[in-house]
Length: 256
Length: 204
Image 1 (cartoon, helix red, strand yellow):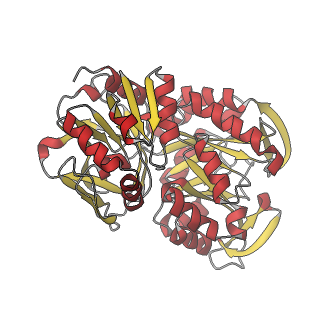
Image 2 (spheres, chains in turn blue, purple; image 1 turned 90 degrees about the vertical axis):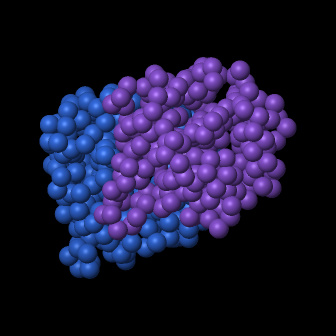
Image 3 (cartoon, one colour; image 1 turned 180 degrees about the vertical axis):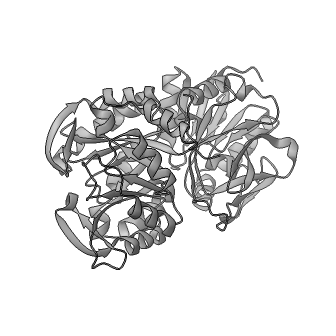
């Protein structure tokens, strides 16, 4: 049986891992390569790196992080943040990442999904989507970009379906309302998107305790769950989360 | 023991190369048929689409090199897409594949209520003893990402099975000296590395 994945997310700025609430007030919390190594050893199923500098001149720093991670971490990882064309995708993949995550760039230029999927395969292209609760939208959620600062006219469910049609192999769905709160994932949003699309959905935003992770699998129908603060500050380990999932009879990789 | 890593612009080459470097293997990455033919063993990786992969293999003369290599009795290990295009054909592509193992690649059913691609960690149940599984515990999981799976013509070609979307598909296959795994040992943690080490060490 396919096991539910626990994915650790690291926001990287100028080569350092940072964490802020709702994309504001970032603080330095460590070396991304060392942290990646620790999560790998603790049993993380996958890692995600978001380059939140995402300016052209700092791209090289991120590529170096990707290379160093790839040389010692033998689980899949994806990289997102400011990747706007096929040549930038290629550079990140050649440095050793498995997948590329596109978010704001795909909203501005959706054909980047088609081009990426055609060139590197559907499994390489992940849609990162930030959704904000908004009763005026058909699905009840609006797509926002730039970490929630800019609203788009896209409906969350419609955009997810369009992105799958264009060729994404996975969706990382981040709830702006839940992000950084540690009150739990937004289950309604996660379930709606996961049931609407044919590709795996990774729930993101709001995890505070291991029970939240079990919840988003059982009630949110997620295929994978992203965790950040709950493991970054030493409150819990990936093993704690997996033990809780196992206790709730959620299939999970327990030997590594 | 020199391993040739077949470079045909198909995805996960960097990951496999990184794993080989971590295992301190003697390896060569090449897209040149002659250079690869001189290696002792090959690894034939790949992600992406069968049709474009076959086109590149043909353009570079690597299709014939792989057939000759298989015929020479030296070991080949296909990974992921490599495990599909060593078959006769793929539903994904109108093109004929390499035909090193009789069979075809088939798409997971879209009506089984499961997500496609099959993406993530899953169990691999060996159905016959084989050097690839010697150093791997029975409850180890491996990382998969694929929408098509191998259907070899003969049950004796099946080394292991994995359950997904209502199907116990062949997750590792072999015919004589041609072996292949649908999952990614290079991305399956230390048990995946153990499997690659077994491939480097085995005396077959």
